Length: 55
Ligand SMILES: [Zn+2]
Image (tube, rainbow, N blue to C red; front, side, top):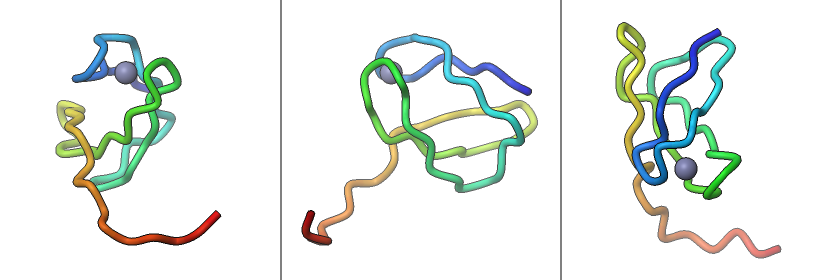
């Protein structure tokens, strides 16, 4: 279990098992974050996906 600061709002984001390139959502600001590195764990903003999946 790792807790990493959200790059958007600095809130703690918990990851059970960080997986490289995994997309996680910050529960606080709802930002989509990508795991850029697992050792140490580093999060970055997930790239915006220009696809419309509908609702
Ligand atoms: Zn956040």
